Length: 130
Image (cartoon, rainbow, N blue to C red; front, side, top):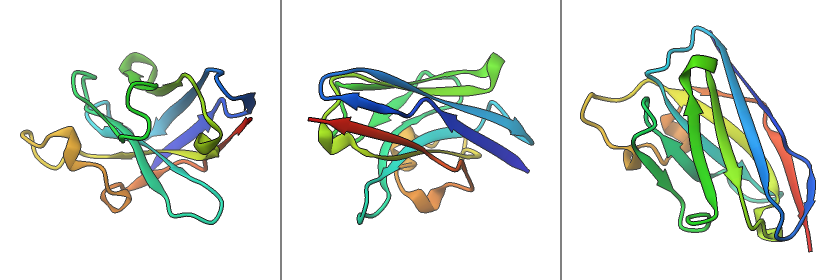
């Protein structure tokens, strides 16, 4: 069993920065692909960012590219989402997710669907005021 716990969400103003953390425990392995998704009120859960096991490959949704950075610290079993230049449109519950890699040759843009992920955290609320 894998447990994922997000933290760091809070109310901020437009233009502010925020870093979210996702701590993994249980039967979690550093080889897992890790993703961030978000779900705004009344909308479907959408892809935000993904990172491969080593942190060498990253992929972002167009809506956050250039503003958000995903990273991981495997020694701490933690994944981060650094969010800069936040906009009111970024307001959502942010979820981290994990799954084993599909193959040794899969690329991070193969992991943009929520249905690809086996394990999910409970989410952390990010609210960006104008």
